[in-house]
Image 1: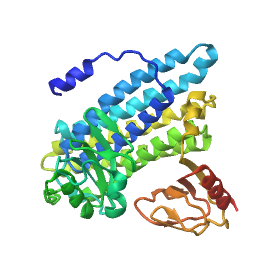
Image 2: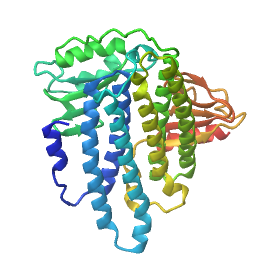
Image 3: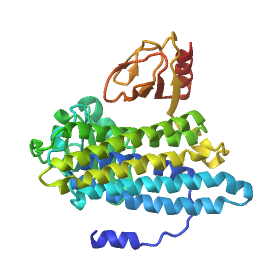
Image 4: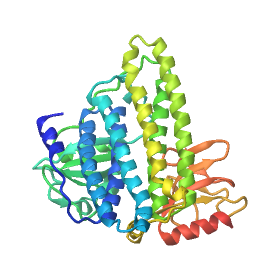
Length: 402
């Protein structure tokens, strides 16, 4: 840690009136970005991405303190305390996710030990995540995302912007790109290079992947990607279960936590087997850290949804967040012979008369299928996690039942 980061950590956080609802939403968005960045830093062995994780972790610490202060000021009666206790648990669990993501980033920053060939073993379907600093003479500088129409033109998404110490976690079409901004880009490797060059003025020239000297490294990296995807989904579902007081979503968080535990156990066994044959077993030490941190993220997601599982009434400060939510997550079970039974899902979109994005399927006897990684066909008995608006979610649920 450098001097400036140490000074930032030592700054006092004074109480000021805050909107706890807004802080909870910001913590959720920050946690999801932290997971994405930390795994990308490991899989691509990127110290730059790992450093951004540490910056975000510091931001999360401040958000946690401000949320705790706001919740303490809001508790005026035993009834308030009962309803606010699960919200305080959400804040604490979210900070645990942040800490776990920071531990993942330190695998790279502290060179704890990773196989050199991890990037070569990445599945082709995995998109690239890059950190880029906007040059003063970039043709994108001083333009909005709507004006450059980045995603439509290139398939590359700008998932976050850092402007000094300030983060824009969900940049939209009205967001202006400024010179000096740090932009986080996600997209296909074939397309992300030209966008990076336009932003930075520097050619994207990644080092060629090294061949693996470890047996079945591809299988291990596949397991890492699956654990990352399931952990992200668990966090998303956990927050949604609280926001909508949905016990079924909370139960799926529990199912995901069990699946991540099983994956982590198998992954750890593989690392130990690989270490027995490796010339330098120490270079696999970081993978053990990765598995442990992943389990911590899924455990924290389960803690977020604990209040729902215990049937504790959701506090109004959480319910207010729903009123501004354009999209919701739902859980739907596909009934045999229903209109969704046998429906194809391509690129996350189901071939049905309703616009919903299918995120994941839990198939009895087969486990979880992440639709981002593969197309699928819905079957009777499938438990589907999908995202859409309130109205389309209701329509999707009816199609799943009838």
